[in-house]
Image (cartoon, rainbow, N blue to C red; front, side, top):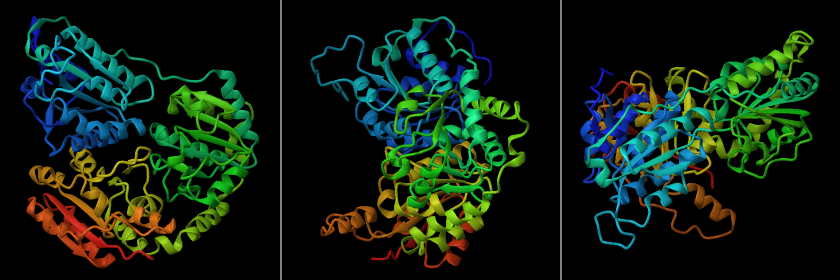
Amino acid sequence: MSEQPRPTSLTGGEAVVRALAEHGVTQAFGIPGTHNLEIYRHLDPYGIAHVTPRHEQGAGYAADAYARVTGRPGVAITTTGPALMNIAAAVGQAYSDSVPILVVSPGMPLRHPRQSTGLLHEMRSQTEALRGVSAFSHRASTVEEIFSAVARAFTLFRTGRPRPAHIEVPLDLLEKPEPAGPVRLAPPTPALCPSLPVLRDAARVLRSARQPALVLGGGARNAAAQCLTLAEELGAPVVTTANGKGIVDETHPLSLGVSLHSPSVQQWLAGCDAVLAVGTELAESDLWSAPPALRATLIRVDVDPDQMYAGLPAQLPLVGDARTTLDALQQQLAEPHGAPGSGAPDRTGAVRALRAGRDAETAERDAHRLPYLQAVRTVLDADAILTSDSAQCCYYGAIPHLPVGPAGRYLHPTGFGTLGYALPAAIGAKTAYPARQVVALSGDGGLQFSVQELATAAQLRLPLPVVVFDNGGYGEIRDEMAARGDTPTAVDLPSVDLPALARAYGGHGVHTDSPEALTRALSLALTTPGPTLITVTEETPR
């Protein structure tokens, strides 16, 4: 960004944008409204690009994906009241998945009475509403406090478990100039590392383990190289959560991929004598069940100390940044007895057997999807980014069966489990990396929560394939009703010509009826400006 003059006074709107720019923000997502125009006025002069989705929830998901793929906080701008409520679901998803996004909104004036006056977009408390789904929601009262609030948000993003934050700037403060000093910046902080005694204890347990295992979550993302080295030196099979997908290449002989939900893998994990879990909650949304009883010594690495007592409590808690902690742990493994991998048993045969057992459990359910997922994989580059919806084709299909490596990314809304994530998230990822392939995977039900973002992709002329597995409604809920012995109710949706809808939004659309046709359509879509919606009709077993 070019050097900006240092004015003696700033409006609150300019103060917000200046603080964002000073913290390195170059991209924002949002929708202008009557109350936030003073923020928008300053974006371009401060070098901050902007994408306008068609719904604030789409802005939140785009900012979420931008943050996941770049490692930098995503920024979303809303106006007051309903706009802020529209983005709340995306903020809740970011909180669940530990994603650093900052939402900036106007608020009622500083001296606005507590009793309702009927002011446009008035609500009882925006900060209280957002406090329930974010790490903090801060209402500023001066320009200097805006600087402090932005610095506080970026300090949170850099030093602890990254989670979303909300800053509210009252309407009159947005427009009124006030004297302002220099922007306060989030201070540099060293990466947190556990103490030497607990690292030595963890190394001793891992060195002596007869059946070790690595469980990797999204918090291990910045330590991919260290995770692979540990797995190979210990000869330890690796299983990941959905957010940890691809940290270790899923084609590696020691990789079990995203398999924590598999009964076979859970049984194997319960029989291990040492489990190193890095950056994962070991939550019900990862396991699809209550955590298994472990006979192992559980070593947990997490920057959030609260995680050491949640889910499965750690016998050896290593509170710290994943990369720094694993580097220190490897030093302890090597120091006393030489390289730990020198005598590591070859467990690749056991991994192959576990993979076979895992796949046999769901072969009947998943077989019809596999050729289509293989078709997707053959077209994509190693560094392609896939975005995913809370849909059967994703959590039963792509997550366990479409392999990804460290060069690529797979973004999925776990935990909170929102619908409509895939399409706006793909726009956020493509905005971050225009030269990389980005593909959205969704179901027909979930897509229609955010289908209007096809217009955003068309306006931006993004080559963006959107592959939709159409099962005629809410397939997961239909199956759950049937499993309960209930008559499926309110889950079968009338057919929509989704390719035609994509064309109406200014994109392209095609239906495919074979894996070969999907390969051709996807190859063309990756080089065609604008979104291409590609449908696959799912003939699920009944």
